[in-house]
Image (cartoon, rainbow, N blue to C red; front, side, top):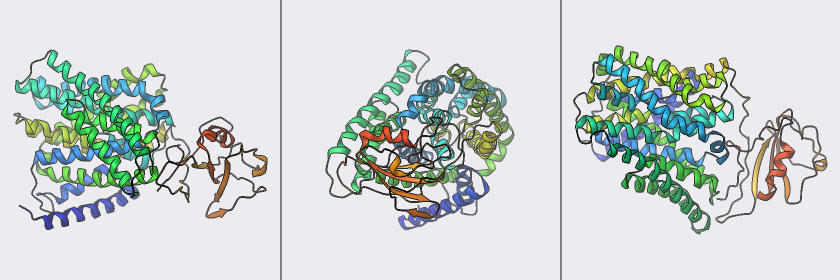
Length: 503
């Protein structure tokens, strides 16, 4: 048994290795998930680290807690407009899409591994969903910039498809173990997962947003902690009642993030750091849990299952589920390719181990290998696939400076960073000729490395970042002033949302 001092030392080293591997990942284009898992494997009992760890119950706990924080962070960064444009297609992919993927993959796994039909379907269910942590990481920080509707569909799907995968996994484990026959009990399980998870997530999100807006806390650092507490409460309450905690915490994050809590910017920064810590520790811990020698033993059949999953099951599911929603052919191809697997399948693969199923260890090793293949093959090639399919959109650098409104109460004001495109209406126009409404002030213009204090005769140039202070009610008017001539959406912050940063 390791001492607490040794555990703290190991945790610190793993965090530092995770940060170093993230830099390596960014330079080499290797998906960060893959690198973290490799670091964990090297630190494990068969690697140079020699850390003995085969506690599947603890690994399941670490994975669940980390995914809870990651999904909450993803939720608070998801604007309502992304959901409005994508919820129909994402909802079908998150339910019927997962089922079709699990069915096809499960049939292939049963044949390739010589498992029973139910055990094969169980393995297919475990790898049936896309992973939110990986999709958020790739689309928001991995250098892949695609059309907004496509990105929103992938993000909403990955954040909401866990209930279906969990339902299929738990339901099939109960059937295989003889605890529950096919029938009404499984339908009740599915109903509870979706309905209770949704209701509890939305309710706690609504109540929590009111609390964050109206309760005066004396210390600014307590607001992110309070938001975290609300997310954990949502997850735990839903799970205790038989609902999907993952769906609940994601919905709670969406509601809180869109209802503008006090110290909003601080909450975002805090949970961005928390999400990174959770990703590093979760993927590294899951890597330590694996045994490379066992992975070699299942490599050939696992490659066959991964090929069916990537090239057959996911594309068929996307075609049947997303084609009715008027996606272009290239977009359907990209949706098919972004069936990224990550921590969710590995965490779900611990369920058969905890249930002591006969072939549980084989399932775990195969799932782990499939995740490695998915991360390396699909994750590594995503930028090239996006370019090949001509789905990339021009990237914009983040604003070189930011302004904040510092207050521990709600302030009737927004600070918005607009990016001036080449075809923006404001290009070549002096500030005094913009006819800005009362209650709107141009606070700063940033041009390259130069900051310009605006005057009436200051002229906007393409590539400028314009920081505007305004009242929220006037936002739509100013949006139109800085909108491109093709009426596409203007740039504000990294989510296209206004920045009010009380601190």
